[in-house]
Amino acid sequence: GNSVTQMEGPVTLSEEAFLTINCTYTATGYPSLFWYVQYPGEGLQLLLKATKADDKGSNKGFEATYRKETTSFHLEKGSVQVSDSAVYFCALRSRGGSEKLVFGKGTKLTVNP
Amino acid sequence: DTAVSQTPKYLVTQMGNDKSIKCEQNLGHDTMYWYKQDSKKFLKIMFSYNNKELIINETVPNRFSPKSPDKAHLNLHINSLELGDSAVYFCASSLNAAGGHSEQFFGPGTRLTVL
Image (cartoon, rainbow over all chains, first blue to last red; front, top):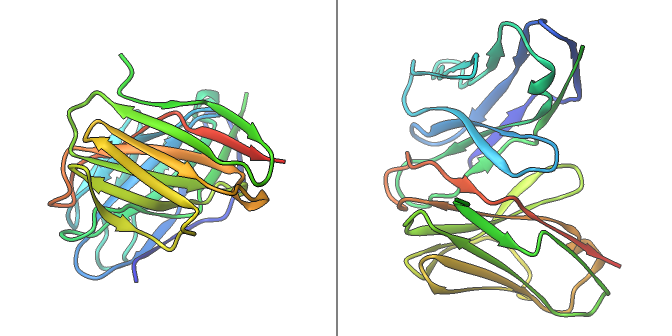
């Protein structure tokens, strides 16, 4: 079945540090890939997505590239801010059939001033 | 304007009770979902409805019964609540169930605590 493996957290960084959160997936065919962010006390928001190999999703300084050869979709940001503190979820959805999102276990990021 | 709304935001109840959580979306979407997030933040889909028809039903106890009176609403009724039902329940919606590209919009969540 489809699955997503995310790097274990929590991750603690200082402001302006470089962020990488690793995500790899197992799926049949070519799924769509997503990063969602959950700020404290809130629901999930879509951060970025990529729908085919070599696509790069980007938003708010975050980027992730769909790598079919390594089945990965790592999230990166060059300079994190305190306001980026949140839980980040990698997710996939297979094409056709069920529309369900399969999530990774989430990575909690804390950015200190 | 709230896109996906849920009520109540917090729900504290005793074991054995029956409770409902309501979800409404004003985005004109065809598909709605219920997800459960446990204490370790792990998110898993429970149900999905497309135009009021059930299309996803994961392995969920039959004490959980979704109801979709129209395509803008998807409610979740839980019978005989158990301690293990304590979690945050998220409703979501998307434009359609085909293609695999449509973004899912999430509600703010309902934190259920069973005592």
